[in-house]
Length: 309
Image: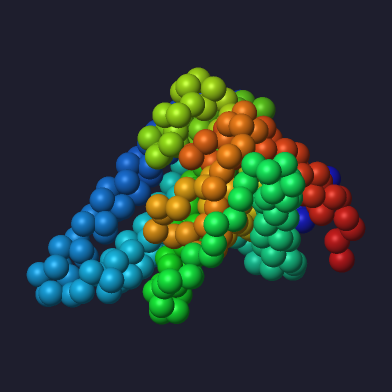
């Protein structure tokens, strides 16, 4: 096993024992944090826009400022509530568990980004060669440079929110707590299930039967949980999660959906079979998503098995 941050490893596993009551407290804390983040999202999504409407701010500026304030605020809330719950419920210090500044953390983050981007690029190449994906143009065509830069900024912010916020809550807090209470196996399974269920209300999820959707979405949750347990911090999972979403949807547009407000790369038409390419939700509900998972797992295994100096 990798030697990354062994002090954090001992801190997480110290005095771990099967403790059903701790597990229930962890689940209760998860529900509270999830609802707190949802309420924060609602408030920051409505409040700034209402204020700017009253002030007569233009629509473009209102979208830029409102989205920036909303996503930045929700990200801060997600990290704060997850860290607070981790400390209150498990007694662990969030700085040691979530984002420790160990030697090489920048390399872990960057490798995660490159690895997931490479996996998305591989899928793009496969679908292009198979004739399943055609490029119709580029998002910046017919738009001002300023408008395109605004889209890039909002895409980066939205994907950072999804990556860092979800990793802090599901892997950093939930998986850490459940693993201490009920062991790694049960902790991984429960975390992955809750991770999948939390995405059922996302646009496009209803295109797949909810049982199959839950099972398929649990796989990325398992993968990211395994990466977290293997590295004992969130730098590598956040890098993977961020680039997975960014390159799939906003750069390479593997779903062929062009109505999103954060798409700044390719405009594509998806003609491949759903069993492979997935649906408008994403590649996660197709064989291509499983292929990407295999590539990422292999890359992480290689990366974390290397000697660290």
